[in-house]
Length: 246
Image 1: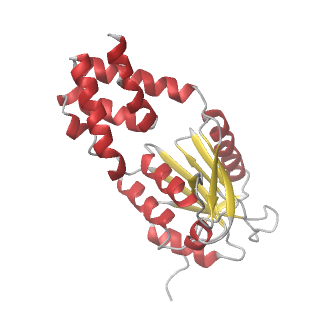
Image 2: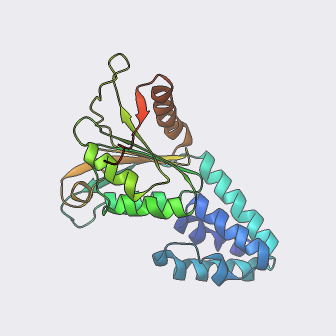
Image 3: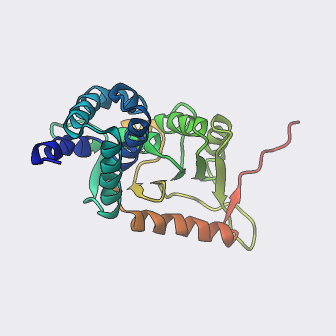
């Protein structure tokens, strides 16, 4: 492969996340058609991605070689943690970093295996929940840890909006009484994690002044997943029980 051919890979690697690169690679390995390869990407990425994929195909001359190379790039990116990204909610200012809503929706839409989230409040109409519904259609493993001490209504709304999701609440292991769950995190495929002050509700991610950090690091993400798994095993986290109809 020539240096010019390798150079054509750079824009594609910068544009797409590792999971997206793998989806493109899988499609190219089947038929080598650029338009089909980008059809699962977010609409705002498709046009540019199709142009880059077509250029790479032309340079490589082999769809199998392109697919294999994209998989290598994706694997390399997974192993090399990216610097943390600052994520803001609230007033939009020139030069702002990633917005909370965009980060949450993109992360969930890019998920391939699992989504783990925690929030104090939320609503069925929030972009976060709508993204979870799309993840449920892809039959991903979805776990949402909600507050059931003060905002059980929100927990029930999320459960009813995403029936496939497992909704958990924090409880005292001795008394069984609900305890406040105030963490706000989002973990995708145990590879990336968003830790934020913002509840995953419309008001929090669009109107309130909130700040968070997006960390693309599987070791960091796995620590969060492990913590919730330990709380579940210890009986601190319990499934939200659906009250019988009266």
